[in-house]
Amino acid sequence: MAVSESLLSVRDVHTYYGDSYVLHGLSLELQRGEIVCILGRNGMGKTTLIRTIAGLTPPRRGEVIFEGRAFENEPPYAIAQAGVAIIPQGRRIFKSLSVRENLALPTSTLAARGRLPPVAGRKHWTMEEVLKEFPQLQERLNAAGGSLSGGEQQMLAIGRALMANPTLILMDEPSEGLAPKLVQRVEEIVRSLRDSGLAILLVEQNLELALSVADSIYVISSGSFVFHGSPGELSARPDVLDSHLGVAAHA
Image (cartoon, one colour):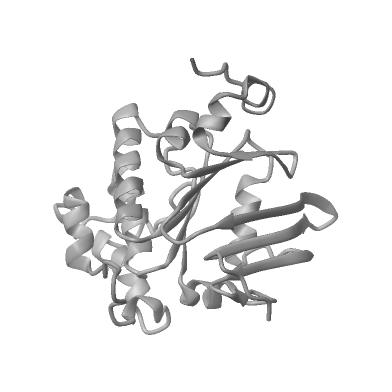
């Protein structure tokens, strides 16, 4: 078993969908309590990287190491139980279940992770704590998930992930389709989660959001990383911003 000092270490990962070669030897490091953002245009491999780490689309070559444990042919549920939660693109809440039922899923006997005892030095998320963080969900506890607005569904997806009390959250495009005010709320939530001791791997297309919250940024293009550095270093690279993100450099 390989050992890594990082919370998460992705090493020379090559991922395919059938014969389609999607991720071309990606490597990244993420430390405890850190926000790492993956930026890139549609179809560049961002979601595939999330799926690879979560065990949904395992790599054909390379390693994913979490807390010193190499995930070799581990099923997704085992990776979730190890402390990795995913907030998928499009929220993927259960629309026929109530808000309360959606939130309770990670605490089921099958899920196991959400039933673990509190960890010293880290906030322990319960139904009560999640509803404090998202008071709008308190008012809709008995409503069907499908009846919520897009913003409320995103809060529910985040709250559901927190109920598993993960060490690492994989967030895939949390600002997608949200009004600017709600994007600002997502930014506040991401900062708050980091302050509570969580590490976050954030996949985004929203450059401003990434620059405002990330400790470290990777830019992906055609399945390869073309940049890695701080938000300030990315802002100073008009070539990367223009060629790979399609935006003008910030002043």
